[in-house]
Image 1 (cartoon, rainbow, N blue to C red):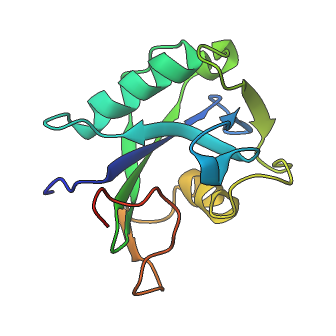
Image 2: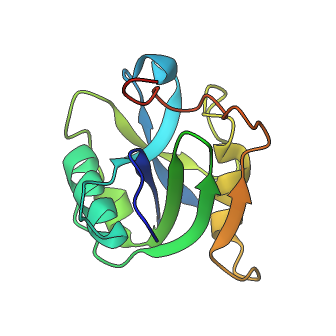
Length: 153
């Protein structure tokens, strides 16, 4: 896949039984401040998807997970989000490694302030009966607004 100016990875790190997922209380960017999201961030130029997921999870949660599986590609006029999943005991060792609190949440009781799309993305990640990766497109032709604005835009 061709990389865009705003290409993101969303890394869902589950416990091996899939009952808990590692989440983060966001303080930045501004549109996410005070909300809860999954781990992840921008994919660096030339970086492979699994490398980006591994790096982001190591930086944000202090654990190293090498085995990631892409399950969703979200196309938006402003960005592309590539969601990956891993089921690893490292989820139980995840900790706050930067300035944003990292914690385990039960997948059936997500925090009320979770980013709205995670309410369907997390169950999708757990569904082993779907052919992946699934590709979806933002319903808003102007973009979903779920990211920072591109430079110069």
